[in-house]
Image (cartoon, rainbow over all chains, first blue to last red; front, side, top):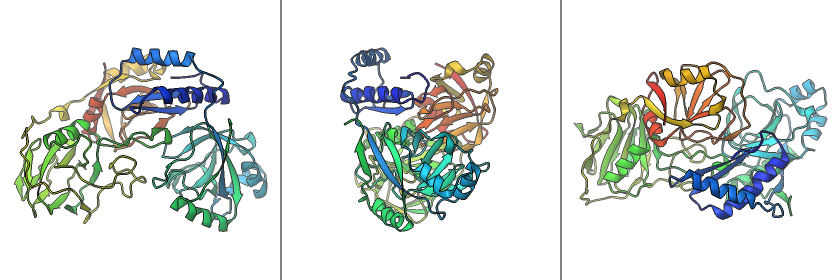
Length: 226
Length: 279
């Protein structure tokens, strides 16, 4: 299912509310993937009668109750912006013509919306980067960017959930695993949630990393629609 | 138990796949050639989701430390049991100390080895399929030991199946993808008249094709992708996502392979020809 092609909070809210309704109507043979302006329904078990499903979706959409809102949360994720992790931070600050402190201040003062999760397990497509933090991706991608690296590229900011090649400008590191098979909820963030970054020291980074790996770190969360 | 004496080119544990986590970015994984997986498990009367070994191009050498029954399906990799050739799509009894090894790749690209009851390797988020970093390794390694339950007696209902012939099939059956309408007349003409060849960039994540379509400037907002989704990059490169493929993408999704076509493609290697046929 597709909504108008725009990166837009209203469209996202509509998709999430509809998804909430689907979760109640569709059984476990279905998987639903929301992203930006689309909701993809996949049946893993049966071949389906397309017309029947389409009719059900149309009926459900007509019944959408705009009073009942989907659960959404604001998560505060710790980021260490120390230059040990922020290997491109000086370069980024110079290009944006700001100090390192201003870079950290700006990046950690906004709330970013999760418009999609994909590409890698736990990789969030974040929207809402202010214009004054937009910077081109690196001309030559690195062969390896470390797990937890926090980067800037174009209109995007985000966290690499695992070691991978990448061309983003790295300004810090988040010690909390974005995907952890050992945790009760392997990925605590859902599409529609918001993310805020909180600057932490190297010592805190070390501590949270251990807590994150054993699954006892509880990221701060605030309900958005409550 | 099976002891891995040699691991082969790329041998991994696979089952039907890992479902329920696509919305968190987790690929479904699972056997690339599901037909071959199903037939191996069928012959051994295994649960349909039993874990098998997926063997790519060059096979492993395996030492069996318990009695069991095995079945090989998929690519013809000239397997031998204690140096005696054995036939694919047939149930074979294996005794303690037997050595299974593989030879020349004769047809196809991915072979499957199932044992009675399936391999009992670690289950992560509902699946044994190896996928890094969800599972500790992406494939099996030399000297690793793979666990299964000993099976002393088994009288198979069916002892052999006809050997599959789709390894030589070149036609990929496809349906229109969500962005099919973005294709120009020229792109469409080429897409359905040309024979494409598999690029050297082919693996469990995706198969790229060597020949390009004319360039385009379409961009879409990132949206869900499936195994078998055919994407066209702005440069005109065709990328067909496979079982370990990413769950979202931003290139136009012009075609969608059905499961049968995914099986056909899974048996192709670099340089093999493929064409698309709308169904």
